Length: 326
Image 1 (cartoon, one colour):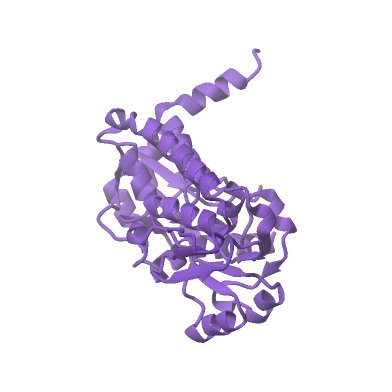
Image 2: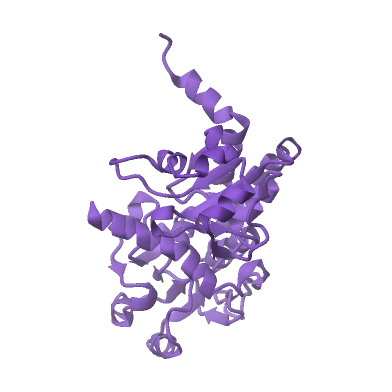
C-alpha cells in the first residue's frame, strides 16, 4: 500500500513538475512535418523544442519516457514498436509488458542504449546536454514531445505518427478528438457563469491547482466554465484560504483512492472550513483519478465529456438507468 501511495505521489508530482520545466513549450511548439527525400523513405520532423530530426526511414524501435508519449504510441496503433518505457507509463494495460527504464532526474542512459532504439521520446529536459549527446552518439535520435495544451496534443500525436510512418492513423486520432471537443463546446452557453477548481495535488501533500495555459483550463473554457485560478500561470501552489475565498461551483480532483479511509470526494467535503464552498454544499466534486484530464493525450476529450456529463447531470441519469428496478 505504501509503495502504491509513493508511486501515486510521484505521478502527481510529474504532472506539474514537468510542466514547470517545459513551460516554454506550450501549444506554440512547431507542428511536426514529414518530407520524403529522394529515396522516398526518409522522415523529417521538427520536435517540440524546435529541433529538426531526420530518420532514414520510419522508426521501428522506440523508447518513450513519458506516460503521455507511451499512450499516444498505442493510440496511433504503434504500441508494438515500443521496446522500452518510462517507469510511470501505465496506459493502456499492455504497456506493462514493455521493459521499463529509469526516467526523470534519474534517467538511466545505459538502460536506454541497451534496448537499441532508433528514437527516444522524452517530455522534459531533466536529461542533461551530456546525456542527450551520449544518446545521439550511440545512434539514438532524441525527440522532445511535451504538450502543455490541447493544440500541443495534436502536435504530439502528428509528430509521433510521422516518426513511425503512421500519419494517416495520427490524423484520424486528431480528427476524432477534435470532433468530440467540438460537440462538447455546444454546452458552453449553459455553463456560463459557473466556476471550477482543478486540484492536481491534495491538501495532504500541499494544494496545487491548474491555472491559465494548462489543458485543464482549456477544457474549462471549452465547456463555458470559469477556472477560479485562471489568473495564475501554469500549475501553481495555492492555499486553502484562496480556494475558499474564490468559492468554486465545482471541484475536480485527480487523487487516487486506495480503498482505505475517506474517498477523495469525502476528504474534500470533510476539510475544516470548506463547508462554505458551493461545490461542497452541493456535492459538486468529481474525482478523475485515471489521468482523464491530467495527461496530454487523446483521452482528454473523454475527460472533458465526463466533466460535462457530471455538470449537466447526464452521468447521474445514466447511473440511475443502469441500476436494476427495485
